View 1: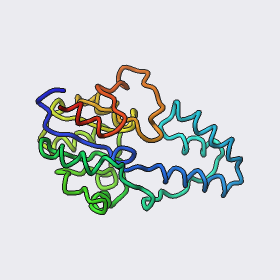
View 2: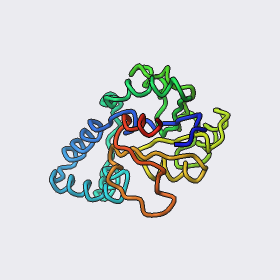
View 3: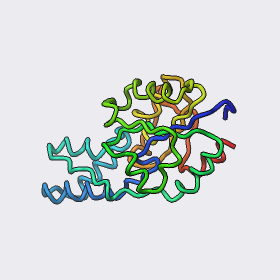
View 4: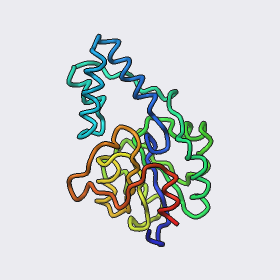
Length: 206
């Protein structure tokens, strides 16, 4: 990869935080609260995941049922996060660009990784959400970094890869979470690189 890279920006959900238990809880609650056939709902979610990066929300809307509140308490770190971040931090500036509720820095601190991030840009605090290019521009301005000297790593093609490509950042699609089954179609949807976990990032950047 380009040796001129100075900053690495991360999404949070399904990139650093494993949200699998949150999604499982959401599915169970939707099914129980609305007396929906479990196999039917899960099958639809799996099918929708091929084309939509918010499959549970999308299918729940089909049923016209309420989306359960997000359970931050069920989030956990992916197992390789605490090993990878310190190594990257020795060589790069690290930042966050994420669609997250208020309290992102507190959650990062609770997981013991806040100290590795020089900049945290979360949608709730800024009042702007990805894929709006403005949130990426804010991050790059705050970092005093040109787009071509930055990498965006995220699990969602629509929110992470497309806008970062448009603004001129290098892009890395990490195939974790509900969006991992979606296939890029348009030229702007293709990342520069694809990885299956953060551990592969070290090889990519070596």
